Image 1 (tube, rainbow, N blue to C red):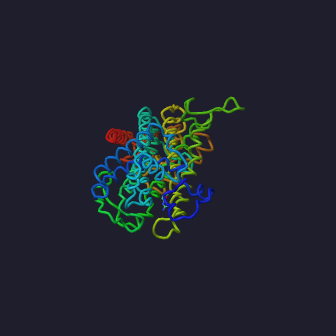
Image 2: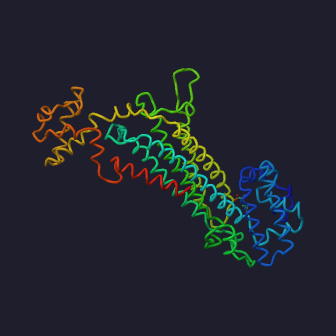
Length: 459
Ligand code: ARG
């Protein structure tokens, strides 16, 4: 197998060392991006006067043929080549001979691989955003179906305060919405044309980088050729976006594993998104959610590993940078698969409102009782203490606030008046919240509306 660099060497590379360094096995995924970049480069060379009109036409036709063939049959994109760039060049030379050998004029694989990866990340970020929106849409539609039904909100995984189930679901949607903008930021970071950087010092040919950038859909050209040859910050940003998306999916998965279990039973997984046990016939296991939680480790690992790879590199391109691709491909694949699994789980969830509301009553209203006393003029610290003592008594008696007749209330404090019976209920508790980010039913409805509008605008 001849390489793109064999001229300088007396002997062939050691087969094992060549195989060790080859990246075609995985960078074949950049095939389309590589050909699209080469098509634009041929045009730039034509404008620069390097390729004649006929050569440009010939090159363009051959590249288009190669692109069509690879798209129609991805398995064809394979062979003994060192990397995808070598593959495309070999195909080109096989078709048009020496004219094909002119395409690499003024260009280095160092900038080519950066270009390919930027193009790849740009389109993948958009696809991942579509997948994030599918999960958000599923949460929104489930939240709509929940109406004003309650569940407990937890802190320290102990019952804290009643909230609307919709509010809980939208909490996860809020985190995923940040993932969505983080993916935009990742795409924006990749949005710079590296071509024109050459191997490290820039190119000698009159390449119109501004036009080339426009042709390839970039809004700007990189600032410095040395930096560009080794800059993979856009990879780190993408991996960070993937890792954090996975962290959020994992936290959602964990909530659902807990809340769909027998002890809680607020939600139930559809049969289609659960699995059984080979031994225990009664089991309905949340495997997809556990796997999402489990796979989060890989995505975090790719980010941490990649930062470690970058930290010791001297300026300019170094082969270490080739390690970026497997991290990116696996992170992308992991997030895409997890988003789809979570979307399917959410789309199939059943909500057991009675169970959730049953858990949201009783002593959860302690803060509301304290707030009631504050409303009657008692300093909050005193109210907290008084309600703490009440709670201790009620716990011992196995009762809750809603079971207290007025006389008993007044036994605890003269400040309790007849309105307390209506004020200390789950419904009153959520209705007493005032801020736009709160669980007040109106605030939740506004959030739902806003999210719905956003989803529509993004589609
Ligand atoms: N396969 C290489 C990579 O992924 C392409 C760039 C190779 N450049 C070089 N000078 N060896 O980074």
